[in-house]
Image (cartoon, rainbow, N blue to C red):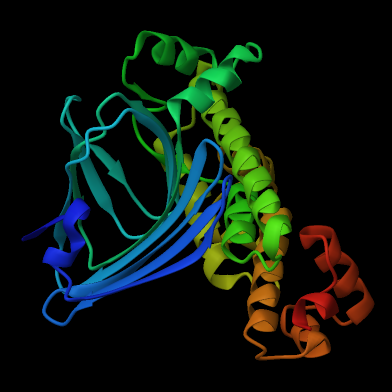
Length: 327
């Protein structure tokens, strides 16, 4: 298995391109692309603000590889996996942390060096890295139930992993990540928007993890039922353009309606139909962005017979009309 030191990519990839998109006092943005015929290819997109850095990392290799992080720095990081599986081992922590598709977690460490084994040839992740002094200022602003445990670890400089096993993110998180990745604003407006979305994602992530940490025993699910709820979500993500009903989903996965509704809210912080709607709107946005269809064709494709209703919902979801987005 190949090992790649992320601090020395030129040693492994012969073709590396760097596009410095923006360099200002408060905001920076850079894009990197790298490839090597015998190894694979990838890209890195970073957006830096005062105290936070959003990174989108993709890599496609011909076989599993190990990414070696040799930069021992104190930092905190929110990680969101869009594709692939990775097993991380940090030098000053026992055991490993396994991340899978659409899983997330939050980690603070005084030494972030370690090994990340990519278990599949494709890997795609988004992270937000926080400067500890920036987090100190946030913590000093007041106490919060969801941040209390982290604050104690930060004060004592002790490693902190929000939850032992990364958990499935919910639809609202996906929407925020998509809005950052697909932001079409320009100039200062672009970076103000992205910075606000990074903070929103930070809050949502901590609230989600806090909810899981404080769940009472009465909220615990039988493993079989929990698997069914997650199977429903997977099915919806593959079939969201089809006409779906609660009755059909309950029958297909042997769940009653109450259990399906409760499970969706508890595990994903949304409803079945809100999830379907969000996926359809993201598909509409993709079609318009790629100019594969016009507004009326897109509305019909995702299940709307009325273009006005589609336009109103699109604007509600994203803050601008589909016609504005497509122009």
